[in-house]
Length: 370
Image (cartoon, rainbow, N blue to C red):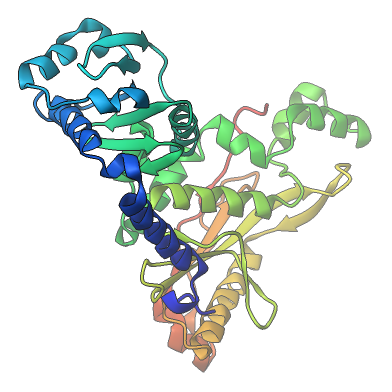
């Protein structure tokens, strides 16, 4: 698996985007005009002199650009002190920084949605200035000229809160806490209505009120896919590192669950995902798959170490390999790998064992079936 820059499609696309931006900035007639530069300087002065820290959109008709001139600070600050400006999300002004119209309607919370809206506005005869804290992102004729990579404060906050890969243990612990939220854990288990149907299909003599809590631990079919994808998305949202989409298939046709790679394409982190408990069959009529502690210790440990060995043979620099286990067993009987006998390891496995780490089980409990 070669993720170095020369063969990294994502990195090549990034370079192309940067190149496209440079070309746009040097060939755009509006952007290079002296009147636009005056207008942009006026907008920058507005936020710098007034300690602006929010998010706002300023619109000015492109046809007014010819009559734009440098404004004194008093005129610029007069706009900021206008209550219609401070309480609105989108403000249309003229070349003298006088308000023509204003709307209280926040931008979408996701940057890609906000970008689509702002590009559309800039194709309607407006010069669009998106202010986010101290940065100004300009949109001209459907093209974006950004100072900030973010178009929403929510996205910026998520980015600031992301952890370095050295804090992966903290991220795992945060994920563990998230699993206690009902909207999160409910998607792993069969629903209450499914349990009711299963009660009928199984001809259970138990009362339904007893049957549901006694069987609420039954997982959905193909639950490992759900566990893996949920963890992968959480890591992607909370780590400053590239999370490889879905699984990576080795030459031996074995599947790696989650693969992380640093920005240089040199250091890799492997996360193997397992589960223990009971899952329903594809038809949803009975429990068909059961995994217990013996499937994890030592089998899953051997499997992870064998992956390390195969990747090492290919010359990949695997910094760490983590084994994560989702524990959905009916009874809380302790971690699946409380102790491990290293004497069971082969010579080659022992060589890679220092890079292996078992994460404390992610306990998943269906406290309130939905």
